[in-house]
Every structure is written in C-alpha cells, then in structure tokens.
Image (cartoon, rainbow, N blue to C red; front, side):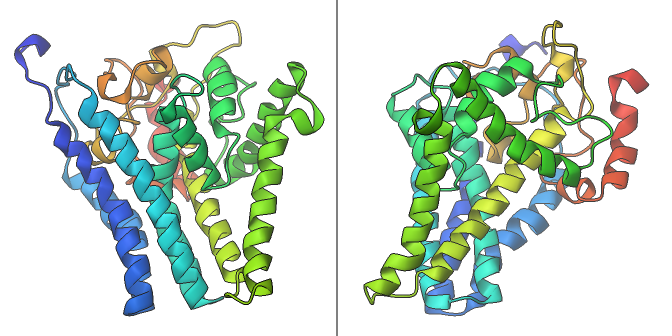
Length: 347
C-alpha cells in the first residue's frame, strides 16, 4: 500500500506526552496535601512504565503521511510549555513545604524528568523558529526553567553544523560510554556556545552565554536567600530542588544526544547524510517526545516542524526506543555490546 493511500495518523496520539507533566504536577500537589510518596509518580512512570510501553506498544511499520494542518501540534507545543511552568511552580511549593529531605530529591527527579520532555524537547522544537517570534521566546523561558539557556544557540549553530564530527561535543564516539560523554559534552557545549559568540565579537559580559549563566546564578542565589531574609520561608530547599530538577533534565537531554549519534562519524568536509543519526519508530517514544526519534530527517530538514518529519530506509536503527534504551545505556558495556553490531561499519 502506497503512502498516498494512507490517511494521516491521528494527532491525538501525541497527547500521550502530556501524561508525564500532569503526573508531576499531581504528585507535587499531593505531596503537600497528602503524603510525600506521591512525588515519586513521575520517576515511576518515566523510568519504570516508560520502557515497558516502548516495548509493548511496538514500532510503527508504515509511515503515515503528515497532516495538512499543523494547528493541533502548535497548540500542543504551547500546552507542554505552559504545563512545564506549572510543574516548576508546584515543585517549588512542594520544596518550600518539604525542606531538605530525600523526598525533595525524589520530587526534583520527577519534575526534572517531566521537564526533559515538556521543557527541553519543546524548546528544541521552538528554538528552530524565527528569532524573536513568540515560540522562540517561549523556548528561552523553558530553557531558563532548567538552567540551560545556551542550548538553542549551541544546538542550532554548532551541533547542526558539525554533527557526527570531532568538532561537535554533542556527538559521541563509539568508544565513549554515557558517563564519560556526560562529563565531556556538558562543559563542551557551554564552551562551544561561548566561543561562537566570541568569534562574532560578543565577548565578556556582552556574550549571551555568559550572561545567561550569570542570570541563572543570580536567580538561584535570590531564591535561596531572599525568602528567608524577608521572613517568608526557607528558600534553600527550593534552590537545591531546582538544581536537582535542572540536573536530571540536562542529563536526560544529553543522554538523548548520546544515543542519537553514538558511533556515527563523518569527516568535517563530508556532507551530513541520513546514516549519521540513529532513528527509531517506537510508538511510545515517537508520540510522547514529539517525533524526536526521526532524527535523520530533522538534521536533513531542520526547518521542518516535527509533525512533518519522515523516517528513511537504510538508516541506523536503535535496538529499543528512547525510554527502553535508558537502563542499558547506564551500563556502557551492555550498551556497546547490544549496539555495536548495528553500526553500519560492522554490518
């Protein structure tokens, strides 16, 4: 059956991605009103239920044509963005009431895992829109909510240009494990973002990368100190919780970067091709992460919105979806053994 004969996939499937932020919000509220254990709902769902859904729901075997109207998807992006702000607000409320306990860490993990999709994945999509547009501005707010404001510029101007080469710190080599990659890519991307601005004459305090970092530090210190000085509440647990939330969001983002390009290399003078990104048609990952899994097409057509991205034949395919890949990836020897045979050079 040809693609012309197929109908577009129902857009409502992508509403499944809202489950995680809604669970995080509910957990934060119930953690204050009922019992702290409720803040664990996001962790249980993303790290426990998510991998199972990735496997049980299987993969899309035939690509459906995209919808003509992208309005439902544009609304969905804003829904994710607004829910992210609610997640952060309710988590701050929980942190202020909870104090420095292990439940604060659990709540930060839940809200941070939600932010990894509703903030960073959404900001990734909106960051490709026209600079200064409402969507682009929302992306800036969302990245600030996870203390990673330099991501859009680095992603658009460094990663997309040098992906799968030695100049891109967001592309992992085949000999790198996830833990090693985290240690290199996070500072590496910050430095590369600052370097691009420096080369364009925006040095020192005029460099947006440095300004963003200073704003983040100033905001964290204000949250930690000002509420206590004013006699409102202890702000230190809120600041600590925000760091936990941001930390797991950033680590999850960079885990995704790791599995999307691991071991796929090209020379600096070689054009990017579909073979330089890992892809998967795992339904749960596709629908809940805004088609992030069709990554080759995103790099080949960066300006195309997520609902129009298409799979390609002959691209490297992940063994599992993004959720199910998490646990094997945390043990580098397991990941490498499972994935090495799928590298095109080993086939």
